[in-house]
Length: 528
Image (cartoon, rainbow, N blue to C red; front, side):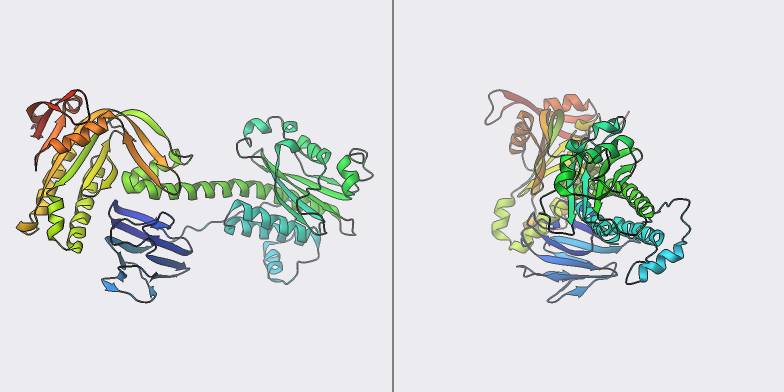
């Protein structure tokens, strides 16, 4: 399986699994991989995975795409270790050995056809006419669909098509229990799972029945769910249990096979088959459809898990932009149900490059972008290393949260250590820049109650915090002199006495009624 590792604004060694086919890259939220940076176009490039081959192609971007430092003007095949350059981002190509999925098919003990015979039948243009071989091949083909179907809907459609073919059916209907109600409580009393609790998922007709019609007998379904086993009615019109049913009179069904889709005693739905009588023995066909229903019941759960995993992976990619890849993976499952916010105590940190605006007037744009790119990378690395969350990059400013979404108990102290590390890192970074292009960092830190969490949806998901404590922290960075770290009293109280500070007294914060007591952070006291 192909993989890329992304480093860029807001990303630090972030891995992405590349699915088969096309993955779009660019600044727009509709891309498979969303990249940040002023030099990235909305639709910049595409990566195509085709089995053992992988290539990248620029799709008319404004600033071009490079591979290993060379700008490309046509599709270029990639190898492990190659580096793709897109604006301020670098994407390194990796290759992982895929984990092989195996599907085990359980058959009845009286089946005497060996697996080699099934494999031979699979290679034939038509199925073996013997019912027992046709039944086994049906299971083999369903197992293939289970391993390869891209979605639950497609899996059920292919299962219905196979049953329609092998059973020479008139109609095949697959009904499902809605996910919210398919639970162990339902299976404790099977008669509760009646037609009114089921939703048609797939309907297949061989004749001219209107596509929207679902020609099924409610009484047959209730009997199937009551007994919990596959049910076969050789002549529905003459069977005393069902002949008077309104649906039987209306649709004129003859033979019916109905089997529950179950896994571990949990009913996920059912498959309902109507067919005209013929000379073929019904028992092997009923056995095959019953076994298929059991396999499909497991397949439904697997497909739902895959779809949930895919949704969590998309969420993890979005979260990794501000949480770091480790914490993003940990929280993606919890947040998969949608955006949510919660009240908590957190420490907010704002870091701003002093003198950046005048500098942009003197430097060419690529030089400015290079400065921001290096600034974002270094600051994000420090925030993540101290257990913080990058809320956002705003021009030449970074906002970080400590204590949300994960509390550590010493989040205020972590924020202060991060502030000291950020200042030292920025000074080391500036030492390598020409003297005329050097700036200083100023930082504001404050602690208080905030609302923190995800806002937005699939198109644009953000993690943020709002509240008075956030506003105060944002104002404190404005109060700071170049190279200074200004901290609110609540942060110092929460962090304990492990830090050296210089009191700055009460400060009147713009946009706030009451004054705020602040101090300058000088360093961390040596342990006794």
